[in-house]
Image (cartoon, rainbow, N blue to C red; front, side, top):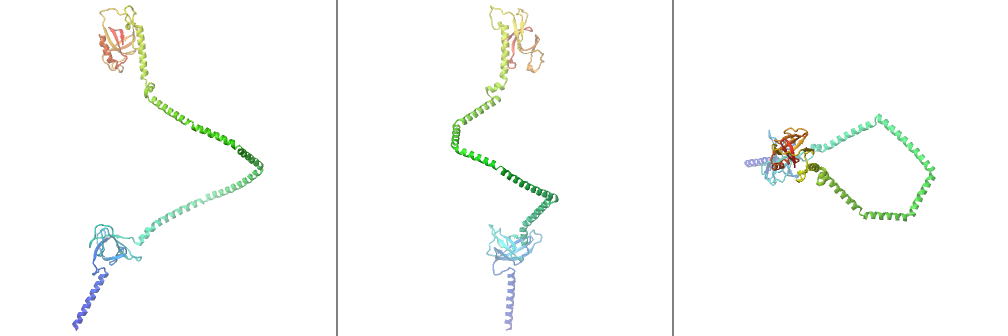
Length: 420
C-alpha cells in the first residue's frame, strides 16, 4: 500500500513538474504541440521589445519573440529570434518591423511580406526595421506647423515695426496735415458746387436756347434723312467702284516694277552684267583711251610719213617724220646712201624724260636693254636684229609684257623709221 501510494505521489509530482515546465516554455513562446520555424532579425535598437512579445501579420498573431541577444561589436548589435507558425511562408523581401501595439507603449513585430521570389527556410534572416515612436511622429507632424508659426510671428513682428514707424511723431504730423488739407478740399468742393448751382441758375435761359438749337438740328436731320441716305448711297457706289477698279493690281504691278528696278540697280552697283561692268570697271575706259591715243599717233604718223603706207614711185613726199609713243614728231633727213652705216632693227618698250635705272620695275627686270637719248627723251629698246622679219616675230613675245611696244629702225645710233 505504502509503495503504490509513493509511486502515485511520484507520478503526480512528475506530471506537475512537466506541466510547469511546459507552461513556462509556452509563456516563453515554446509550444511543443505546434510545429514552428525560427527566424532571426538584427536591429540597432528594439524600443523596449521583450521576449514573448507577439509577431503579427496585419494584426493577426502568427508567432512570438523567442529570444533576444546582444552582439558586441556588430553594426546591428541586437539579435532577435522569432518563432513563427510553420504554415506561414516568408520570402527574402519580408520586413520585420518593431512597432507600438497601443498607447501604453507595448511593442510587437509586424511582418510585411513582400513580393520576393526566393522563399526563406528555418533559421534564415529577415530584414529588420523600427517604426518611429509616437513622440517622433508627433514631432515630425508638428515641425511644419512650428516653422509656419515662427514665420507668422516674424511677419507679425515686421508688420508691427512698420505700423510703429508709420505712426511715429513725424508721420503723425503728416497725417494730421493731410486730414486738414482734405478738410480744405471738401470745403472748396462745397463752395464750387454752390457756384456751379448759381451759374446754372443764371444760365438757364442760355441752356434752354442751346437745347432748342440742338432740337432744331435733330429735326432738320430727320427732315433731310432721305437726302442724307441718297448721299450715303452715292458714297457707297463710289467706294464700290473704287473697290472694283484695278487700283490694287496697278499698285502691285508698280511695286513689282520698283522691286525689279531695285534688283537691276543692285546688280549694276555690284558690277554684274554689261552695264555694271561699264559703270564699275574702268578697263573699257582705259582701253578706249589707249586706242584713241594709238589712233592719234597713227594719224600723225600717216600724215607725216605717207610713203610708209602708200608706195607710189611717181610721188616724192619729202622728208620722213618720226612719231614716238608719246605722239611727239621728229623730223629726219632723207636717207643718204652710205655703205659704211650699219642698219639694225630693235623693239622700243619705253620712253621717258627721266632716266630709268637698270633693274627697275618699269622695265620688268628685262636684260640686254639698250638706252638711247634722242631729242631730250630716254628711249629703251630690246632684241636688236638686222632682219626685220625676225624682229617682227620677236615683237609678238614682247607685246605680252609691253602692249605698246613697236619696232624702230636704227642706223648706227639714229632712228630712221618706226614700225607697228
